[in-house]
Image 1: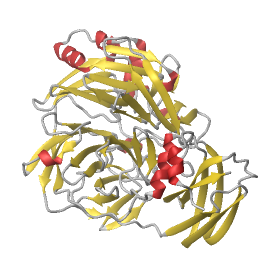
Image 2: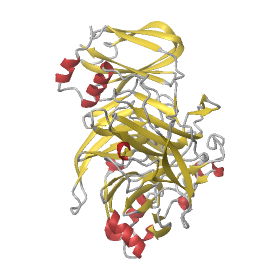
Image 3: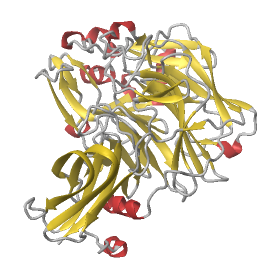
Image 4: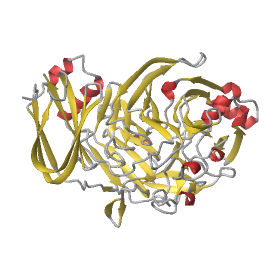
Length: 547
């Protein structure tokens, strides 16, 4: 017996998140889509600005042609040794303003601000979003002189961009342009901040307190957010406060940090976001290989699709073709488990720095497809960088480029600033982080019309089929594996609220039937999500109803 989707839609006790996951499994997303046009190649042109010496993992905002850079680090990737990881002496202690047109540069020390503002604004991997003239910043990780340790800061800050940028350029007082509140709910680093309608979305990330240690020795405490936080803020001009706070849990699909959150227009015209990759899987120290759709009424993991390229936060931009309802996201270098070498897709579990420029597209039928573009980055660049969109080109919302409004054969769409530069693929795993540095070269990013759409990425994963029955069930559940080869499969059972209630590991299964006793597991009546992760590479989700 199958689940009646229309009855589920009427069941108001289901969470929106799980409901949308179930809907997605019935109206499955096709992996092999039509190949559509993105009739541009990406061209990078190097540029330099005197005074800017490189930065990565920072926050930015812009106003009237000026860009402000806050926080981040001027060194390279962090060291493996706890005593040398994220040294406070290499925090960015200055507010930096750049005019990308006139090539001018200004800076002001954070020491002019309160101790709490200084602490947060010199941190790394803050969550941020520019909302008109306001720059909203949450969390961030760095050494705290007050705590005498590295912590994730429990602060939410709102900045008046126009006032602050003008004050830095005119060398006048800056303190009045900041509002900050202390709130433990915003002690998050490595997540992303967006906005749908009136609500802000703080998605994923983690809280990390203490010294980094690759051997997981007790020098730190790490807690993943495992969900998304929705909230509103008091209007500008009123004291900063948080309104209508909500927290939605998903301990498997939203167990992510250091990913790319990209603004997205869905085929029906709805605005939302797409979570692209990120780390780490709940069962393995490897990146996620599927995106997650984020909409106003819930989030949907795209389990039927594998995204192999661009797994960490990097420079990126988004463009929409309104004539065909095609959504495109272009990722500029970064760090990735997979990359192309001599035309072949290489799987490196050390997750190296790459030169890849890739594109993730959603077509009008809702399907996704990934491409590697013909051009590459000029080096192993892009991780921890930011793409700064030009203010005078045609956009839709949230800086999504309006492709239909572009008529020129070549157009400068923005600039890639900062990020980590590495001379080798795997400096971190080889304990050579001292060879890396922040990138001081700024790259103008151009779109140039081209007949090449790039090469579609073909999946290296074998076809699999998993059947689950009977459904609904009151006692035992049969899991029927029909796999082409032997695979290790890990099963995670999530309840209606996205909480992990059970997990099972199946070693080297191929064609086999496994039994799951729902009574023994003490599963209460309701709907559950069964998520199968195959060889840490492929994810399949099934749904059951327990009576």
